[in-house]
Image (cartoon, rainbow, N blue to C red; front, top):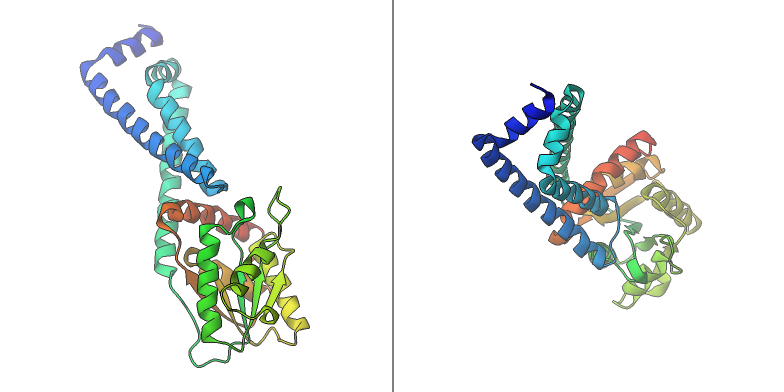
Length: 277
């Protein structure tokens, strides 16, 4: 019996047909959720790898659900294709395990870590994107947390750190500063760092600006970022030259939380490869 005939016989088996229906339904549902979530977030002007990757996975799942029988015939026609098919799913499952472990690590490392009874000299608020030259929900959460910290330490300078997003004419630092000033922070208390394009640059450039203001890198500093980003930001701050760093995490809106965590997964890998911390 040829492999083509074997594939046809296999697909016509009643038990295989029932299993196939459930597999296709699961792929279609998961694919629709992943793609729908990504499209909704992109419609809000949000665009990053934590959004585009699930969109791509969703499209692949939908195509598999639609063309399952054809794919089954294709892979059954050659043993090497079958091997690649199984190897691909095993690799995908292994990757999902690493993502799950990373997410667990984020949850265990979230929360605010602020010094008690310490004279904080500066508060550094890290940017996170300004789609359409407006503060993103994640950035607003960071700024609101920054306001809380600024009220807690009224003597501390406040650095807003964020450069120019691709294709936009505005500086994230200006948008951040305007947000804080409009909510009662004195304009002369705010230091704008508008050249950075990464967390490492956020902190290196902020340290230099603070030193120009007479604040030494060994003085106590609070870094405000998102809850999932605290651990990595504090590690990068140490490498950037800060001696006494406390990280404070702002909550991430639930509708983009896991996309943000996925983006952080790849950012953590990139930072490790580039030796940012």
